[in-house]
Length: 314
Ligand code: NAD
Ligand code: AKB
Image 1: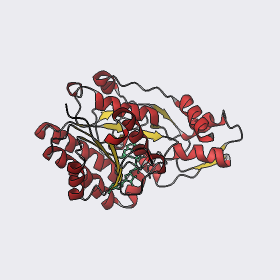
Image 2 (image 1 turned 30 degrees about the vertical axis):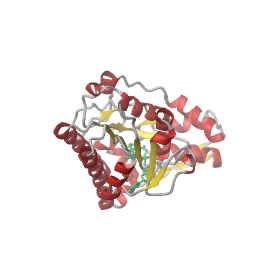
Image 3 (image 1 turned 120 degrees about the vertical axis):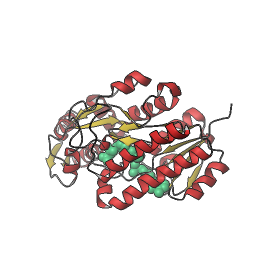
């Protein structure tokens, strides 16, 4: 059997750094090629090959896939919700063209697998707020959400029409300490830890009672790898799977942080991101992912907060 050779596109980002490191542990450092438009993240330096690449340049991407004998692509390059609203055209262009370039090359070169993340941002104000199901009314109101929903159907189309084994997860907001988040509405849940430790106070851009679905990065990385390693016949959803980790509001995470840093205080100054957050569900039903490929989260709010603070203190 041919050895797997993996290309991670967007490897310098919040997920990319940790996913690249996790894949290198499984497949060997030399078999996981990190790539990004920006320079290599310092955490990846010396851990394996890196190529500077723009996913919008299809020819360059194709050359890399052939030159490196790539068999799998993880596509993480995207513009997220908050940044997307500042430049909708750019967000649509990158999020769609990047995905279509990868899917086309996967079809032409018969790649073994493709991973592309979607987001809870596909859901809109008309979707159920609590325990939002896998299949429901989906009417996104952000350009990011629209691009993710369209992307899900491109993945489905390439799977059904051309047999491309493309798999996807609708991540909730991801919380991590290794690499900073890149312009999302859920970024407050990472910033709050840095400000709590450095300044003992945080000004939140969302209202205190804004509940959103969230997940700790170790769970997100494990979900991704478990989905990608599951036998193909178990992957019945070829748009994207709901997965759930935890759900909390700024007020609740602040109270949890106060258990570790009693002097910590939070204030609220909602901005344009409040409207984006209001359009999303507060919690997610992931029964389908649990039944199809055995998904189960490990971290709740208390465990995540403790681990974040311990690691950021180091
Ligand atoms: P990020 O912004 O931290 O990282 C994206 C990376 O892509 C960056 O390093 C950026 O330099 C790179 N990039 C941008 N344009 C590029 C281009 N033209 N060519 C090559 N690289 C380019 O984002 P992230 O949080 O790591 O998200 C990764 C994926 O996961 C995205 O598709 C995002 O929509 C999805 N997602 C993330 C979250 C989250 O909370 N982080 C939640 C849901 C879905
Ligand atoms: C964002 O807030 O844009 C992301 C996401 C939930 O997709 N974290």
